[in-house]
Image (cartoon, rainbow, N blue to C red):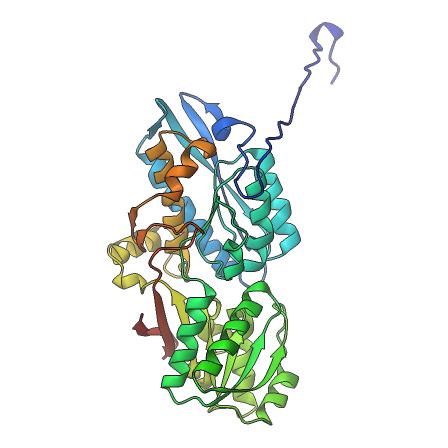
Length: 396
């Protein structure tokens, strides 16, 4: 097909990048106020969410993405007006594959795209490096799941967490082990920020509860064969294993514990092993009933409005879609949107002070933050597994 010269036109596109300076601890103002673009008769505003949508824990990452999208859809359905203009939130969902390098690349992409806020990342090992990038370009981030205390230790005023951290989870797990008569244990971690953070808390809290740590081992968050580690542990005859890592490793580990005859050894872990999928990942081995874990927050069915929300979520995404953090992702997104409404602005520099001071009655509980970005009143819940189901032990 030929085009005559009189029909040929050349369109020149120009782009510029504005770099906003910032202090060491205060988030920089974004280059474009509100990161808004016109979309019909509404101003389109980009909100980001990111987590592992591929890999061994994609089921957990997708749960959060679904829930954030759910919150955004509900918000858009109200035909919101902010700053005197109709607003439509456009969700940008990205996959960091649980890899720190990919997480920072996504964070930079969000900065370049001028999103006004981020729900993410899922894991501590991705959230911590990404947080600096969000801080430097002035984007508030709320994680629904990353629990390593180091996330909020940099003093960034744009970083928030709406779930209990590892200090609270690890202490609760070890105290539960002590109540159950555990006297000796081995610690295993997966070398991630999550796993190492939990292992440190396990070790410190075990000493305070008269639990002797016989050994410390490590694996990685992609491993599936634990025969060598477990054989070495079996020779030490511990009462329990404290595992800092993910369900994608804890499941196979429990199955192999059964194969090695370690049927009386208990496993204790944090929120990342505390998923409904753990029994399936363990091949429904009998040893899964020896698994005990803690999550940040109350049991979903006991949250005010939790059962109603879960019914709507199941209807939208399927009854097997919900894992563990979905409702936290939903409320993280709603918290960002609520701060924008209170500030009457989608500009991060303008709504950030409202986010810092927010008092939001969410499904997961009343959300308000310390000056470090931690929840004012975190709650943890302890679980075990029976008949292929996760069942609650207690809430603290």
